[in-house]
Length: 414
Image 1 (tube, rainbow, N blue to C red):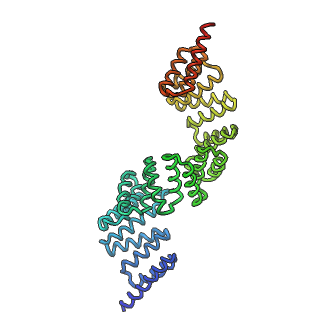
Image 2: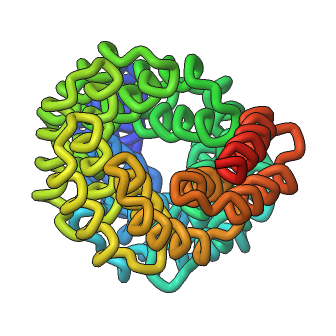
Image 3: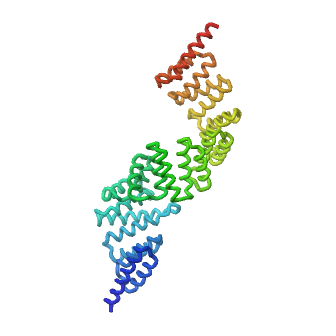
């Protein structure tokens, strides 16, 4: 009678394969349940059911089946591949289980030893190391590169390696991998997002990046970061109304960097002369990031443009408190003091800024103006000549030098 039972189990197995390939995974599992009752020591039945469970993200049941496969056939490398791969798939970034990832790496190394020419174990070892504590992106890149060498058409490994390169800020290599992967398969919303970000970093290809961010949004209409990234791209090509629409949409959803999104919307509004709206956005960003000097610098600049010098001065003072070793807040406060005709105060701030950034043409320019209005023509000339040593073709510096010489001569005549 056992051969009859085996024959029936075999028919159920074949039926389950047909149903699985037709997308009827639950029905395939039902057939495999019946087949396993008929032949409870058939390795292939447990393996097939484990694959079905994994397809449905029922990882606990899948792992139980793969454990049974390894119990029945402990020398089968493909069994370790299936269990290791499932442990990687079951990874939850919100509740990471690093012990499972370490087990996956151990399983997949066994698979590599038994199947040295198979690219999949290398791919999933790299994916596990990318997520597991105790490993670096460089180690993951090494394993993923092995997978890609064995199968250059493995888009999954290319996407994973692109993500590793992105994390170590090797944007050129990341973009190369994303482009290669997207030629092979469509990719996830995240893949399009990071591909677009790399286009901006490496190529300044804002149009291409906007296309990538749009694809990410099409895949995930609630993807706040994609709206925010596309908004930034629109700002760079001066399409400020489009940018504001995207920032408005981004702020409806969870964001990685909400303060930056608010400040970027503020920049877009300021470009459209909505200074009050821009100030409101910077103020909202400050509620999220109260100790970021650059927010105070930028809002101070908006206050200055709005002819609110006291508010602007207060913001520049706060920026200096937060970042006393950076030149920009001193420069901006010095610029404002120049506008308010406090040339002595401006000179002090701008000299401090120059001590921090001695080759800044902007600081030299504003300091030269402060000296000029204080009738210290010698020092004004000196800093203007420094600008020309840095940039010999700077036409406005040449014009400033002529003005200094002319005014000095007139002053001496008087």
